[in-house]
Image (tube, rainbow, N blue to C red; front, side):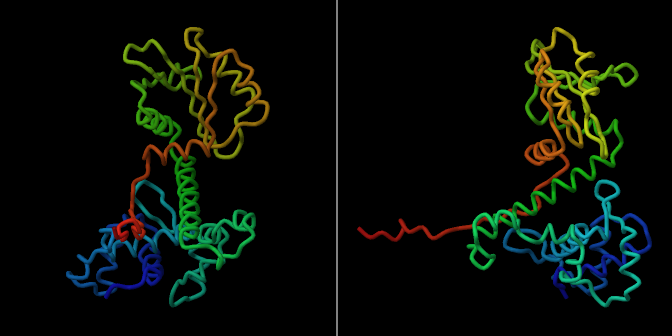
Length: 293
């Protein structure tokens, strides 16, 4: 029997309750037995071509992640959080969408942007299906940005620099060369914008958790600059304070500042650490087709 996506949530948590890390495939295989899914039902696909049961489990897992009942400790793996221990004490028979609404992070995910709705002076009931789709897309997009940021902040600082390397490579730069960690002097990489390496960009990537990039950081970055390079990129997982921005703007060199918001947007745009899950085509009636001569 293929369950509703919300019916998979409590079984998923029960599987993860041993504290171990599981892949989505591991969870799906366990749930096949839990719901007595037949071989024929396992092969059923939706209109967009995705496996129906697999897709329902994926959405159940995603909803739990938005409520922070589970987390992604490593790429491709899922693990239970301490918050689940509180839920466990309630002896629930099921986890519903209404239950998850007690978590602010989940409410932000599932509720359309209230500020934008207020600007348009309308209620949810007044929104067209297209408006609702756009609102849901924005919510999902912002949720993905937050997930990416969470992963970036919890990864190894050196690996974070490699992620930036991959991003710049996908942005069609000719070559990106890492510097040696023992003597990088505030320089993490050198980008060649042309095949001969005539036009170069120096980069610095800082994986911070809370504090902003300060003027001192930009000053050290400028100090490390080579005079034969006129372009520089400073990337961070947080933001830049006012004095840091002013210092970068006043520099002789061209310094591009990329904060967490711009970084996650670029990662999504160039498919770094993300992948297309579903594609839905919305078709409209072709009125021109029905014009009779």
